[in-house]
Amino acid sequence: MLFSLKSATAVSAVALSVVFATETFAADVTWNVSLWGKRRAFTEHVEKLAEEVAAKTDGKFEIKLHYGGALSKSRENLDGISFGAFEMAQFCASYHADKNPTLTVLELPFLGVNDLETEVKVSKALYDHPAVQEDLGRWNAKLLMPSPMPQYNFAGKGEVPKSISDFDGMRVRALGGLGKLMDAVGAVPTSVTASETYQAIDSGTVQAAGFAPHAHLSFKVVEVADWWTKNLNPGTVHCPIVVNVDAYNALPDDFKAALDDSVDPALAHYLATYAKVYDKWWPELENRGVVQVEFTDEELTSFAEKAGPIHDAWIEEQTAAGLPAQELLDMVKKTIAE
Image (tube, rainbow, N blue to C red; front, side, top):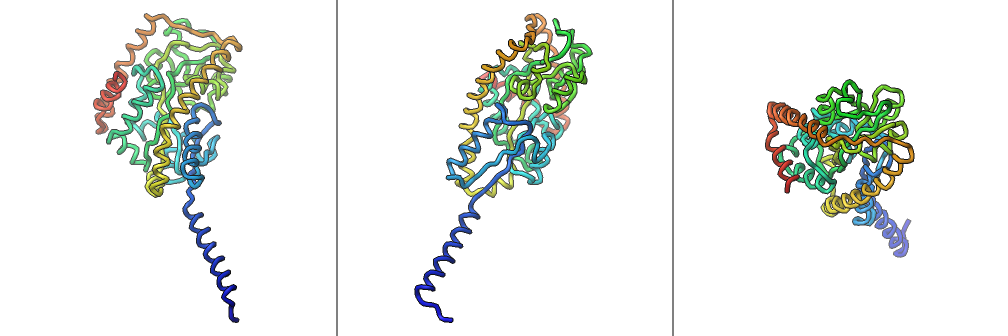
């Protein structure tokens, strides 16, 4: 059968449109992010990152957030990144200190980080260190941005501690360096996951949990707490956002730039959002009648002195493992002081 010129033109137009449609579809990129819990202050930078990236790429680069451990358990997110089960994830260094020992320097107690802006600054400096990049590179992971958190304090059920010595024998949810610090004062640290903490305290499996305020709210610890340590401020945990190296390297240059350029706006949004947590936190404590425990300066000084041996032990352990531990800790302290 012979086609007319008009028919041939129509067919060519259809074929051409199919090619363009295929090319447009092929250029689109969708990344999946593995998170746990629900949307909260702790994840707002990822929400903002996805929004910024979509805006910068006219929606051609989509970052989809999956909450509630839908893609992976929180303690398995780094493993998922390593074999490309998803392109981006959040995890906490203390969940598997042996897998990311360089990051645990930021979980040492009493480092002197007084605000979230300082935590962002020191985290970025640490991420730039070759030893840290090599450490995470073992898991095919690239550090993208921190999830800065304020100092942890304990919320607990039962008898209100009136001195540091009252923690002796108390089972507490405390991870990383914070756990080691609590062990030094006689407490019994456990590594209950965030999602399991409410039930653990309610049932009496643990008597108290160390969290930042947003987590005490999000995981409903405040609903079963009788007391909260207002000024203990012993340390925090470090929970970065990482991306799969292969997925990152495969991005077109403009998408890669869009992702990188979205980090600072995402962190700025996170800091602004976290400031609002306290607008809810203080009234929540008051409304529930939670006792706010304040320790004396003498008690806090004595408590802080127990951090020294923990720092020394960390340096010894990581140096023996071939890491520049002293250099990393010195860099962290210098960045904090600047």
